[in-house]
Every structure is written in C-alpha cells, then in structure tokens.
Length: 433
Ligand SMILES: [Zn+2]
Picture 1: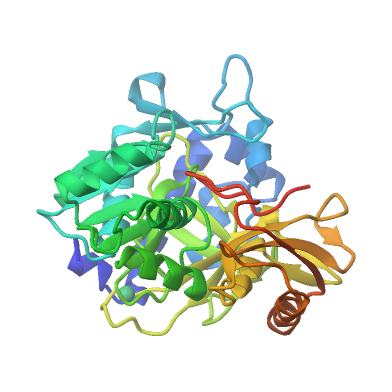
Picture 2: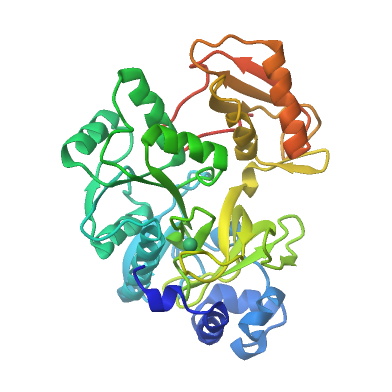
C-alpha cells in the first residue's frame, strides 16, 4: 500500500474529513465558479453555507457534460466552470470528444499532483511495487491518461511507454526488457492473447505477471477475466477513471473483488438512478450510475458530475485492509439498451457468451434495430465462432437460452465465422447501429 494510514482509514473518518474539504470546496465554487454560482443559486442555494453538508449533497443539482460544454465561448473555450487564473494553470488536457470538438481539462500544479497521487494509489493496489517494470500501451498525447502514466514513477516503477497499435514493438519490449506488469485496455489484452496464439509466441511464459486493464468496462467480468488470465498466465486487475474528474480514480487489489477508490479524499462518489437522477444508497450489491464530486480541486472543479458509468457496489470488508465501498463497472450508461423494460449492457452479453468457449471466440456485436436505447425483442446479437468451428443451431439456441436466463432478454443469435468481427488495439465497439 502506498499510503496505508490513508487507505485503511475507517470510512466514517474519511467521510468526516471529506465533509470539511467539501464545505471549503463549495465556498470556493461560490466565490470563483460563474457556472456553479449561477446553477446553485437557480436551484435555491444562495451560498456555500446554504448548500449544506456532504451528507446533504443529493439535494444539489447534477452536472452533465453537455451543460458545461454549452457555456464555452471564443473568449472562454474551457467553460464557465473555470475558476483559476491563466497564470495558475500548469497543464491543459483535452478529451477525445465524440462530437468532434474537444473539451478542455485545465489543472493547477496542486490538481496535477493530486491526480498523480490518486492514480498511483489506484495502480499500486494491483500489487505492482517499486523496483519492478511496467510497459504501457496508451497514446497519452493530449489526453488525461498522460497524468496517469506519471503515477508509475511515483510508485517507483521503471516505465516503458510503447503506445497503441504497435504490437510487434510491444512484444519485443516484453521479451527483451522483461517488465513484470503491463497496462492496456481489456480489448487489447484479449487481442494479444489471439495475436500471440497465431504466431506461436508464448505469452503465458513471458515476464508479465500482472496485467492492469483500464479504459473500458469488461476487465472485472469473471468469464472475460478468466480468459485473459489464462492467456497471459498473469493476474488481471481493473482500474477506472473519468477524464473530467481524474485519469485513474479506482483500482482493484489482488483480491479482484471490485475497485478501491484511490482518489479518496480528492473525490466523493455517489450512486444515482440513471433514468430519474434520484440518489441511491451505496449498499452492497446496489447498481446505478456513478456521480463524482471534486473535494479539493482548483482549476475547474465539478460538483455531482454524471460519469455515465454504470457500476455495482461492494461494501463487504476487503482482505487487503483498504476501507470504503468498492466498484465494479458494468458498462457505459450510453451503451445501455432497454429491451422490454430490462436494462441490457453489451459487455454483460459478452460475458454470457464467453462461457461458451472454446466453441466461440468471445467477440460479439450487438446490432440494435431501432435508434435510441429502447428496443423491441428479439435483440440481434452476432456471436463469433472459434477458429475452425462451424455454425450449428444447437449452439446458437443454447447461447440465446443462457442470455434469457441470465439477463432476462430475448435475443436473436447469429453465429458468424472466426475473424468476421473486428479486433481492436484500443477500445472495442460492442454495438453497431
Ligand atoms: Zn482490497
């Protein structure tokens, strides 16, 4: 543990400390953030004091990404939530932005340092330790992932940056430089299992004994994780962040039972019903959308920010000794489909299909027939067969039946030959419209 006194602090003590930071942060927002001064005043809260305690946070309005975006102007391309003076900003990241126009994420020196601290804790939870080497496969470039990579030095690791889409170079660096760990998306980790199998390269026998997956949901799904662990001969743990709040906020420990909040003290987490926005208790087994609040951010802090990540909560004690609720990411709220009132995540469909290995490759593609989330059954799902396997009605029927049992969803399963669904060296697209 990087900071045992922090990471094992009783959760009630953490919340008490967070409450003090939160009140200071609210006062700061009223003082410096045009966006939140206006938003909170419109909601009936005239000052930081009126907005109350951390325990009352659910009475304040939620923040959507597009709301912030709508306040950008030529004079202020960052947005009206910008609080710090130009001279205080030491870095400006941008997010990839599905709309084509990037969002800018400014940081003060203190913000950046807190990001690195939180990321270091979340990655170190995996068990990697000072003196070891880690190979990374992110093209950080303008993106917030760059700050997460700085966490490796903070942990005391030897960092080997390789970047995305250079598999030959990656495998050579593993062979020659013998890193103990690799960090990549779960899709790329799965791609490498296939890539090495085709070339008779022994991934299982490599120096890599820890695989840290992040950047998209799936790494915590038992079937998918088992496939990765088998292929790599390594322990696979998950980490998660959200660009606007912090690059790596959560990280799984060696118990592999949900991610701990490495950003504790910097970020407060809540759960809401994604449809109504109503707050949900962070009880064991609860699921909902993750909402995050900065507790000591300076450049452009966010309050009750909707992450669009759908998560499941674990509150049982973890044997590693870290305290506080843990999360497993189920999927992106944006990818969620609603089939006859039932929420369906593409990654959950993939998890069901992965149990049919070795008959299937594990690749799937959901092809909704209607625009938007709501779909009439049956939901069409293409399932790729294993190499050399041929389609048979009984297998398709068995997969369809298992999806109905596990997820209460009617699907139409189409088996497609091996190699028909696209592989990726970055993030998978599980839905095609
Ligand atoms: Zn743990």
